[in-house]
Length: 68
Image (cartoon, rainbow, N blue to C red; front, side, top):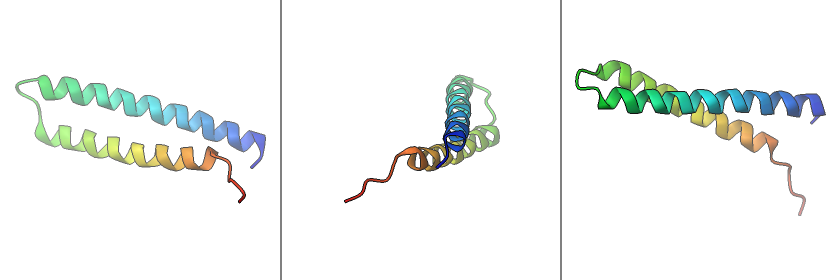
């Protein structure tokens, strides 16, 4: 993988990680609200899971292959 590609992946990883954390905070605040919207909460949780999957994929791409 080229250095530019690695840097792009790292940048994307930082962005996704930040969005994941923001969603985590929003979900936490929303779930403490007595009149929260269940559908909105479910959508946020689904988006958070999708982000987690994308983060895991990017992390695995950034880990160098180990030759046996």
